[in-house]
Amino acid sequence: MPVYHAVFNIVSDRRPTFHPVTDQVKEIVEKSGIKNGILIVFSQHTTCSVMIQEASDDVNYWGTELLMQDLVNVLEKIIPTCKTEGDYLHPGPEHIREAGKRDEEPFWSLNTDAHLRSILMGRSVSIPVVDGQMQLGEFGRIYFADFDQVRARERIVTVQIVGE
Amino acid sequence: MPVYHAVFNIVSDRRPTFHPVTDQVKEIVEKSGIKNGILIVFSQHTTCSVMIQEASDDVNYWGTELLMQDLVNVLEKIIPTCKTEGDYLHPGPEHIREAGKRDEEPFWSLNTDAHLRSILMGRSVSIPVVDGQMQLGEFGRIYFADFDQVRARERIVTVQIVGE
Amino acid sequence: MPVYHAVFNIVSDRRPTFHPVTDQVKEIVEKSGIKNGILIVFSQHTTCSVMIQEASDDVNYWGTELLMQDLVNVLEKIIPTCKTEGDYLHPGPEHIREAGKRDEEPFWSLNTDAHLRSILMGRSVSIPVVDGQMQLGEFGRIYFADFDQVRARERIVTVQIVGE
Image 1: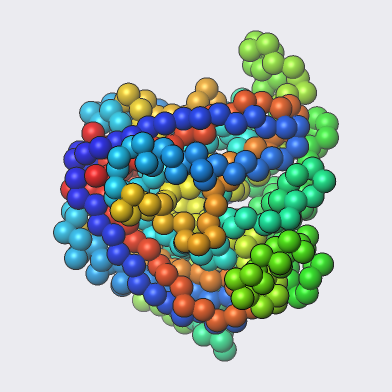
Image 2: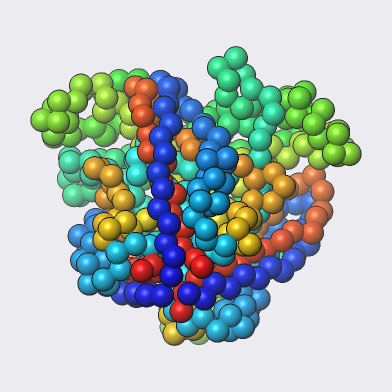
C-alpha cells in the first residue's frame, strides 16, 4: 500500500502565529499520487498544533486573522501567557538544569502556556482523501499554529498519507 | 490496500446538537468489508465536531443528553454564545462582504462561538477497527456535534476507512 | 497492506494520572515490522485521553510531572471536580438506574468532570511512522491520561498501525 511522507518548514514569530498551509498540503497530495486514503498533518513540536478552520478574511495589525485572534483571546483567559517562573509549576529546577545541558537559555522554558495550549488544541488533523482531493468542504483551511511566545523558530510541518 | 469512503447526512437545529451516529458508522464498517485498519469520522464543516462519549441515558426538555448539555455549559463559560457583531473580533467587514457575494445573510456569520468551539473540540475521531469491529469499548458512542446556533442545516458526516 | 494491532494495560489511581507509554509504543512499532505509515494510540475509555508532550523532568509529591499538574489545574478551573450529585446535570436518575443494573455503585458515576475533560482532550493521537520510527521529534513523549477520580482502575491502551 502506498504511504507518502513529506515535510516542509515555516518560521514563527514571538507571538502566537497561525500559518495557512493548505496549498502546500494540496501539492503534497498531488505529488503523492495517492487517490484515496487518510492524510495527517502533524506537528512534532510540543508547543504547536494543527487545526482546520475557515479563512477569516480580515486580519488585525499583526496580520493575524481575526478568528485566530479570537482563539488566542479565549486561550489567554483559560491558560494565561507565562510571564516569569512561578506563574506555572513547570518549568521546575530539574527541567532548567536539563535544558542548560542542552545549552538552552532559562527563559526559553518560560513557554508553559504554549505547551498547555498545544495539549488542548492537539497535535494533528486527520483528513479523508477521495479521488485525489482532501475533503475540506468549501471553507476548510489548514493552519499550523505555533503558540510559543519566547522565541521565533523554524518549525517542521509533517504530512503523512496512507491509501491507494 | 482497501480504502472505503462513505457519507451520510444529519439535520441540525438552531442550538448545539449532538447526533448519535454509532449505528450508521457500524453499518458502513460492515459494508466496507475491511476487517482491520483505522477509521475516521470527520466533519468538513468548520462549526461542527465529532466526539466519542458514553450515552448519558437522561435527556433535558430539548432532548439533549445531560452529559452533552454539561459540555455546552462548560463551553458557554469559556466561549460565550455570540449574540451580535462586536462580541468577538470575527466576523470583520471584509468577511461580511465576502459572505454577501455568496448571498449569505450577515447574521449567518454571527456563529464565531461555534467556530471556536469546533476548533477546541476538533474535527474528527480516529478509531481502530479489529476483526471488523470498532474498538469503542462497552460504553463508547460516536456523536456528530453541530455548534452553530444561527441556523438549522443539513450536515455531511464523512467516514473513511483504510486497512485490509 | 499490513495492519498491526496491540494492546497493553496500565493501572490508574483515584486522581488524574498521566502514564508515560512511549517505550511500550516504540516496542510495538518494532514488533509490527511496519516501516512507514500512520499509528494511533487510542483510549476506549470515555474518561481517559492520550496526549503528546515533552517530559517535565520535575514531579510533585504525588509523582505527577509538573506540566501535567499545570494541565490539571487548568482543567479544574474550567471543569471543576465533581464532588456530589447535582454538581453537573449528568448523571441523571435514569443513568444511575442503568448503572445499578450493571452492579455499579452510584458514586462511580460521579465522574462527570472526567468525562468532560476527556471529551475536551480527545480520544487518541495519530503519529507518522517513517523508516520504522515515530516522528515525535526530540522532545515528544506519549502519555495515557486517566481523569477518573472516583476509583482506581486497570485501563487498556490500544495501538493500531497501518502502512507498509
